[in-house]
Length: 142
Image 1 (cartoon, rainbow, N blue to C red):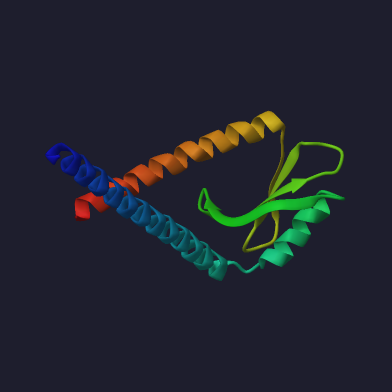
Image 2: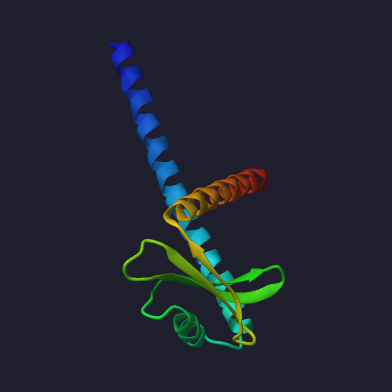
């Protein structure tokens, strides 16, 4: 009878601990997204070219294209808008980078499906490494 009681207690503690971990992970995920939005907002405040203006500039370089993704970033000391543009009839993506200060085209490059898969894999590695560093930093604070 004692064994049943002990087993039930251990299971209950495990479920409670799992529930708390899930809550903490969800909260940390939300905080990460909020930090990312705040960082992007700071960069947008520095830009002289709005996202809408940059999109128009980028789409002029890829006739018939549709923007799939776009964000502002700082790369090699330059503030730029980066857009992934899909073109009808091909699975390739054209990446257009527009200077967020002057509106000049910085770079236009084609990404094949293989290139896109490789980039996603690299992005996932960077995100995983950053998440691990964030987790380590939070542990140190505790």
